[in-house]
Length: 66
Image (cartoon, rainbow, N blue to C red):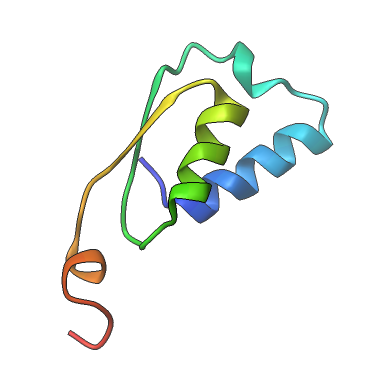
C-alpha cells in the first residue's frame, strides 16, 4: 500500500534498472493518502498488469486544510 505517485516513481525506477514489473506476482494494488486521477490509475494498471484500487481518506473526501 503506497501513494499512487510513489508507485509511478517505483515503476520509473524498475524501468531504469531493466526490471519488468509485469513479472511480479502482485495482482491487486491498494493506493491511498493522496488524490489521484483516472489517468494515473490506468497507467499503474497497464504498467504493472494489476487491478488498482483506492482507499479514500480525508484528502479525497474533504480536501486539504482539514
